[in-house]
Length: 193
Image 1 (cartoon, one colour):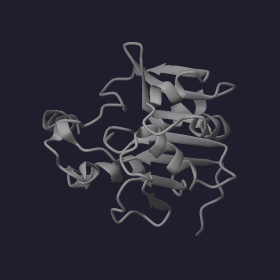
Image 2: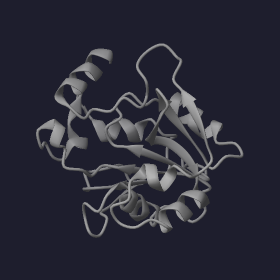
Image 3: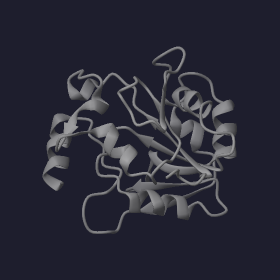
Image 4: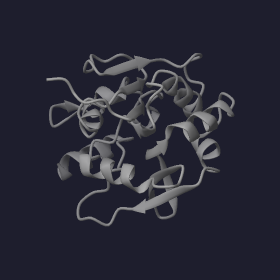
């Protein structure tokens, strides 16, 4: 049975040098309870969501495309632009996620999508710090923001000017934006799971 067409897509950034993880690469393939971090993020999205992973091709499901920014390592805003170039033109909303969010759930992703409303996007926020890699955005606003940035630009500089809804995680349990940048964080995520 084929999935119905969707107006949503996702860009997952999976590059980076993994310095705080001791240079382990590719970090998105680190296992947590037997599943790669990246696959856990993909699984949190609605089934069949067209998804572009900016980083190495890691044996992903059929609906997931892997691309590499050119030049590699030009920064997250440049990686975002590379990912956006491969999402369907019909996409109206795009989740922008990090590949190391193993605690992201379908409910948390759905809450981001529902919160966008009339704004350009919605992100989770932690102590007034927007989690730029745990959000959902209107595709046209995201494309315009990415088009206007130079290689090396930060996501804060790229996305900061866009009107957005900031969601605070108030549910019991760990926040969906918890990222695994260190061995200690990976162990903490495993204890939560």
